[in-house]
Length: 230
Length: 401
Image 1: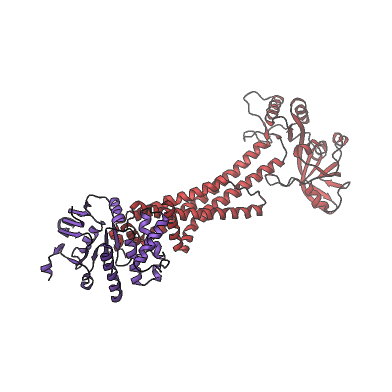
Image 2: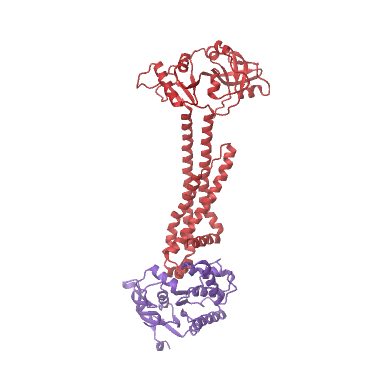
């Protein structure tokens, strides 16, 4: 087997039927190799969000197949996919989505709670994850006491704490100012280079996509070939 | 995991303390009301029982008239002294028999007058009813046999008419006769039915029969069974003896009743018990209302926290994890409400029983039941919101604004 973390095989996602049929993804094939940093781009309605949801095992394809680390996701039920996410995928969202009035440490250890990791180990690993994003001194702070950039770092630490095979970032810089954007992208780049973490990042900003090794552009439910994009 | 979820639930509830407290309030009031009412009711029942017990131990009351309405008190032939003598002679296990007649008369002394009950009986009456002398003496046998005008005063009559003054040896006018006070009785207090048992004047039976009522009838016979004999056997013997004396055929309904105080006590406490249960049931309805309050707030919670639920599902929570989390929040709310309610109920019933001078009886089974029921309310009314949370689609939940 190859070392692909994400592999779409002629994958389709069709909503509705008959006249109301919407082909969000229309026979897409793509691969993301282990250790890659890929940016996924496209206008709204291009299918990039659907692709992102399928990659993150939040949604299942209606046609073709999706192999995550070689495992076919199409046939899994909601709980099986939840277990897959719990163990192998880390999510970073545009709106940070941290639990309010909850300390950074408690936020970061949340995925480990669902993995039934003992409390002591949970705290230690959460601390290590926070240190790795440069927030070792802010463990007790709640989201409202942190800047946007710091909140996103907490969210990244939360995604990293489970040591996932894939870090999935959905517009991670969408809510940040330009300086902070650069900082967050540097952090992702560093995680990718130094720790070999596979990253798939959805963005609509070309500047941010430049940080990635490869850009996958969606248009009308299909991948736009690089020459056509130019 | 359950412990971690429990801590998580507590943290969630602390995040919105005021709302959590208000949500609990329904359960607090419901449980509080149930506990308070059952405690007060139980105290009242115990009080009634002990009051009836105070009427006298092993007491039997024999009255003409049937228990059912078919033969009224007035239609039934009254007892005579010979019936009383027959009981004394033939029924075994009787320690005292007191024939009585009663009448309400105006008692006058100096410028004091008082409408009171005149009881005609003998010294045995004091024993069967459990009165004791505080001053003076009982009736002399000559006074009893000759029907002379001597009397013993109940504590209320002594207090109201004589106050601090000494009543012994005073001459009192009762109805048309005047009598000499030979003794004063100790106070017995209110009966279970709320009558003042000390508002009476006791005279020899014969005196009241001849000089007040002008009749040789005996209206009520009090019997007391010996402590080592069952009241039931005395009751049965008395009943068959009187049936025989009154010429009743087998199968014919008795035109008199022999009632056991125990029986009366049971009836009374059954009545208060039923009332307590009824009030408790009404209070339990407010528990239901409290449960609906919890469901309402939990539904609001689920809607407000849709994004959070989406995040939890995305980072690996199973639907069952989310279900357990929200269910636990509801149960913690209601159980905490239950504990506060138990506190409130105990406090309330303690102060009320103090105020009413009724015994304060805590019933652990009711406390456990109330707590269990409030937790159950949480499970029942928390389930729907929790299921709603657990069945959210993570993609839509994450997109929720």
